Length: 369
Image 1: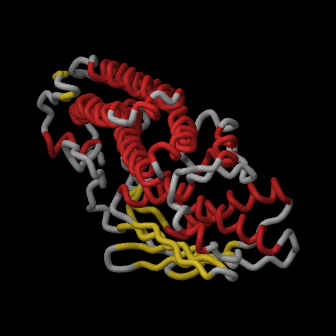
Image 2: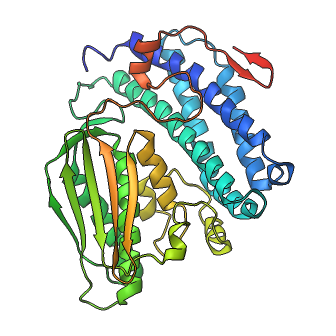
Image 3: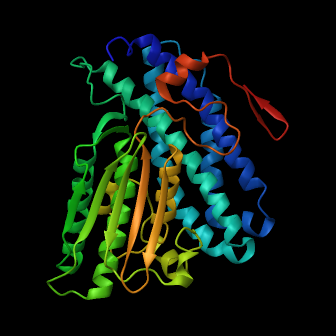
């Protein structure tokens, strides 16, 4: 990393992020404008639209970054926009609940998947650039093999699972006084490159669902059946299987577990969660396991798909459920965005791959450079 992280490269990265974010925001603004009138006037969607529009305007007006002082100002703008956009997920969830009767579940799910996938991509760009900028300006900075910005090239599978399991058990013990044990087996020392926040969010969500199901099925008795997480390292991927004996999923619910069409109860719960960054650490601070929001599984699938992974579920009604998380362990897959984006690279790699000519965002017949 010593040969990679220089002022020139950080400035180039900043200019890439500066030109890329307005393009990605413009796609989402266009999608919201193309919604039917009755849903486009929803006040929660209007809040999101205004946040995206203001961010679009702010980023497109940033001049070319030429030095580290200007880069620092840009990082402050990135932080400010990220903080403002913590309102987006709760607002979108309430919008889904209120608009599903008008748009239908299929269109709502498509809209949400594209919006959340784009949101992940923008936050990865912003957080990676902020991280490498902070690293370079730190006088005691030394290259680390285990971190490149927010990316960890050597994630250790069993450590991630244990961290997620300990937090999930603590949450349920605080809420209910009891939680089943979580056992980990398989290829425990599997190492793979990933963004820890992403994989931790997914595994934590799966474990929360399993713990909740076990408590619902078996009551709060002491001898609860264990939850077992099996890690399997393949040639190109690593698989996590989360197995519980929580009674399985009813057949009529299988079609809806990946949908954002929340019921009114879950929509009301989101009123109690004004901000959400979709990170595991939030659960211990703001989101109680008692508060079922209904979007953890579909959001986890978006996180998995983003880097070419997959999240599937197999259930035996009356017994339990197995969730399978497949992640690429090679670190060579581009981000997975279905709509037309300029590139499949992020951060420093994108700056090197693309060069940094002036990007132009075309929006509603107008050109913004």
